[in-house]
Length: 290
Image (cartoon, rainbow, N blue to C red):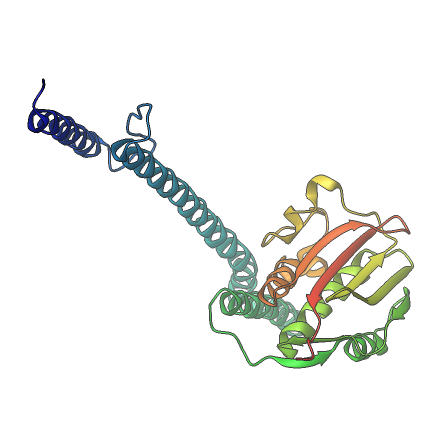
């Protein structure tokens, strides 16, 4: 008969050998490459479960590393795009001033000042938009208040001038919790975008949809291809490369609108409009009466 003590010693030895093997495998893993995994054997013992748990943790760390790399790449690209957008008007302004310095008698001062102020205004707009995006990306949030979207839409559309007809279909007193200045900026950006692309008509629908306020701003322009409907919310994206920067804005308007919606636990996406153009659909939680 095999002594019980000997059996326990053998089991303990195999367990220690397994733990030593796991430790050796972990030590051999490349800290710069989280794709490696521990070998897993069949069974239900603690050592098997330990190896599986370690592999699960390695998998999560690998995914976190990939997300961090993507975020870093996006930050680098954003810094390059922002530098380019700021450099363009500054380079134009410098060229005009240098030309005026070399040829003062041939310089139209009024024209020079108009162009200089326009370029400086563009730089100022880009910087202001960048600062707003930075604030939206932080945890700190401005004071939230109850905002009547119905009244705000009426106010923002009342004094807009242009050839397009604005059709309003608004439920009364659609109220959300929001930062007033931010939600005003979001709606202004969406309305500006609709005015730039509408051929003749802009339709605005606001209604209660369950626990959410749903705002749809539709135009009868050329619309947006399905392949571009995510990209338009990226920073410094302009789908119409032929349109001048002055007419096309800073390239941050829709990105700002999207980030403001997200910061308010809402969403913003684009789909086809009934009139053939684009329809931007905003959803935000309604005020709850607790």
